[in-house]
Image (cartoon, rainbow, N blue to C red; front, side, top):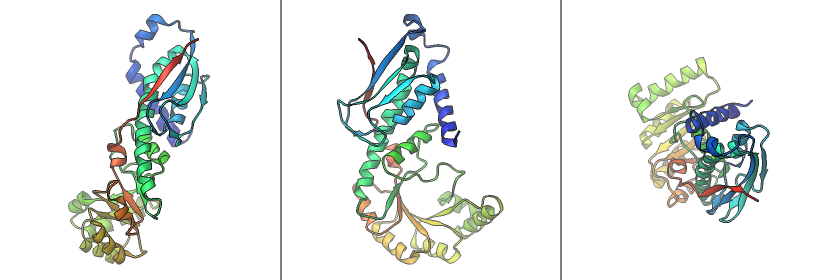
Length: 284
């Protein structure tokens, strides 16, 4: 089982336990335990569909023999009135998984839809859009998966898979040079596979990073497009570059025109609005 699968299983089991508690008493009171049923996922809003594979996994974690027939795929354009899938399982499974499936798919589809808007803005440029760690606690796995489905790239997943020296690290360490030297020594001793990125807040800090080296990417935080162009001229091809801070749909092309490698946009996740879906019983 992959790390993603392990994390997903843990997320699903914890979410079901949170919702069901000591029993789904509404269902227990009026549905026979051996009753089987079908349910269809109805799309009620235009956007980019995300969470189809997650919905199937939720059902099959709860009931491995459940049937899932997909009419659409993750990343497809979805339109109001379409159907995404039909599921067949015990009624207990359908009713107990309904809200978890909808919560995941509605949130993921909103993120994928917003991400696609950013990606579309960058079609003419080499710049790619990244997400950030501004995520919902315990739901990061699926929020970042939704960014990927929408066509964006995932930045580091957490504190463990990349070293990012931000302003607070630099200020606590004493200087940008000390922070880089200590991070480089730590990487060499403990985690040689990790990349190091350093945040810079001015052209002076960019020059100081260029003088010391030992990093893989330079983040240019809250630079205007003009300042960004100056910084990129200094950096050349020595390091990967990332612009961050104050970037939105209205100005992202101004940043992309500079030739920066990446722009990171926390709003992909924290400003996304969930889209409307419903899971309805199929009755004869």
